[in-house]
Structure formats: C-alpha cells, structure tokens
Image (cartoon, rainbow, N blue to C red; front, top):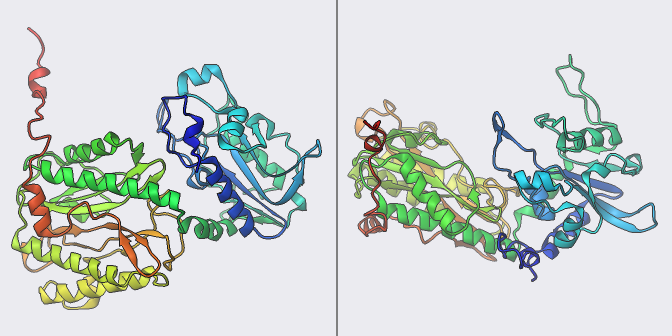
Length: 480
C-alpha cells in the first residue's frame, strides 16, 4: 500500500510511514456505508488550546478527524455525504473539506500548511477548499433527513484576526443548519431540532474504530513495543534516590529515541503512597526510598496510535514478602482474564474475572472480610480499547482485531487496614492485547511481568549507569 509519507518522499522533515491517503479514503467510504439514508456527517478539527499567555499547547488533532482524513492541522471542517451531491459546475462529489489556507508569514512562525492544493495532492480529497470559502458554501442542509455531528462544548477560542478559524467555522455551520441557540438565562439546553442528530455518530465511529485494520495494528504494535522498551530500560536504570520525574524522563526519552511523536496521556509515575492515586501525574517526589514500590503507567504515541502499559517494580530491586503477595495476586487476576479473552466476551466479564480473584485473595490475606470491602482496594474496571485514543472508541464486546488493555490493580492507602505492613502498597499491571479469531494475542510481552523476571531485569546494567550531570547548586553559584 502506498503511504501518505511517500508523498513527502522528497521532504526529509516528514516521516515516511504515515497511513496512506487510500487508507483514509476507505475509512470515509466505510463511514458512508454506515450513515443513515439521505444524511451528512460533519466533523470539525480539534481546537488550538492555550497553555498560558501567548503560548499554546502542542496541537493534537481530533482523532475522528485524523482517522477519516490524515489531516493534522487546525481550523478545518469535513463533510461526508451519504449520497452524491452536485456542485455549481455540475460535478458530483460525496465529501468536501475546508482547510486553513497557505500563508507564508504564518508558516514562518508556526509551521508548514498543506492548504487546499496540498490537501488534494497529499491527502487525496479532491473537493478541498480553503476555510475562507466555507461561509459561502451553499448546500441545502434542510434537504437532509439527518445532519450528524458531535455537539459543541463551547470551549473554542475566537481569534479576532482570523474570520475563518475554528470558532468562526462552527458559528457559520450553526447558521447554516439553524442550530438551536442556548438562552443565556436558561439552565437546560434546547433539544436539537428537526434533522440535527448529535448522538448517532458515537456508535457509528465506535463500530468503525473499534475493529482495527492491519495497518492500524502495525502502528499499535510499534507503540506498544516502544513503551515496553521504556519499561525495561527503567528497570535496568532504577536506583534508590532517583526522582519520579527522572524516571518519567527515561521512559519518554526512549519514546523519542524511537521517533514516537508524543505520549498518549500524561505519564503516571508514583512511588510509594503516590501509586495509590490512580491518575497521579504530579511526579514530584524528589527521592525514591529503596523499600518502596514505584507504579509506572506510560504509553508512547506513534503516528497518532497509543499504547498503555503499566509496570510496578521495587525501587530497591527486590520485592518484600508483602509486596510480592499483593503483586502476585494482581498478576493472577490479570491472567484469569487473559485466559477467557476471545470474540464475544464482554469487558464486564473480564472485569468480573479479575474482581473474583482479587476479592478471594484479599480475604485470604486477611485484608478484607466482604466482597464490598474488596472494591475499596480495586475501584476501577480492567479493560478499555486502545488506538488513536488511549481510551479509544469501540463497543464493549470483543471482536476479532480489537486492541484493548487488561489492567487489574490493588491500592492500599494509609490507615485502611488494621495491619500497617500493607500500607502504601500499590500495584497495577497493565498489558495490551489483540483479539484473534479464537482468543487474544498478548502484545506487550517485552516488558517483564513476573516478580522473578522484574528482579532479574533490574540486575542488568543500564546504559545510564555512568550518566552523571554536574551538581546544579555548584553551577548556580554567583561568580566572585
């Protein structure tokens, strides 16, 4: 298959293994096949988000928009029609996109733009126009039985100097479709009127994106393997006294070394009691204690596709008896779910399998006496889809070629058990899987999972063992 990147073959600044324009075209056709009769689906690019003052966050495209187009820039809108439409010149089309125009001055400041011609050539969408044309784009939206789109969250900034930014595209669309306005004094939003459907795309896109194509699976395998290498290298490099942020940095350096553009979600690196915070992202702890566990939940994002891997390891290189008991219980729970993975099995069934093992184990350890009490130490489900989002779109029953996680955990906070020897033990083990015809493939095997394999990996030398930086305080002294 020809890759989008091949269009950039003469451009050394671009990767050569993006998904192909033919692949994205096929995805739009699959969407079209699922649309109801006489309908149009409308997708908007993601907003530019402000970080502070005049600095924005690194732009990240809306994943549905990326899935359908391969377009990675802001201020764009895509329309996919169920049936052929007729342009003013008599040409027929069934999709149209409006993108930000070329602008040499802005491109000098913020990067290259495809523009309408580049979108046609490199992304293969022949009805491509600059977004300045959207306002006068004349299509009779009232003639459609349904206009499908995701409702607006009113969180898009307006750039006064740009009359065709995302804010304006949304406002122009609202006028075209007679979108119901919210009264400033009203608490309830009006129900979308007539032919506006703000719910139908959720299931359609879940059906499309939940089952991965071979090309997507290849991207996910790369993201997973990169993330596993990060976990293994940290196991080798781990030393008492290192900080949570230093550990985060090693993981993310490995990601960048393999040309992963981003992280799939904020990195979670929690030492000791911090591991009991499920989405702990501060990563501030300056010095890890050798008696602690450290919970590391990180995922590389490769060309938009993200992994989601968690490992919990002993900072000092060896699990204590109590830590090992909890760890082995979580591992047993994960393997119980792995054994029953196959098409037709639901996420809730997998979660129940892990909960049964953990509840039984916690009772045997004397930590809990009832099933309800066990939920306090394992408060989340165990599975979700992965793909363009770390919690990707998809349906809850497994089908062949779905990619997903199994992530049981036990988190014992201070003063929650009678015996303090359990306090501060937080263990989560998360792996990524591909549903096969009659089972599942474990994708993240490179990162050690058992206590024995983790301890063995932690004994291996690290390329970072001799990496020493000058002491900052000494460098920071004023010169006499």
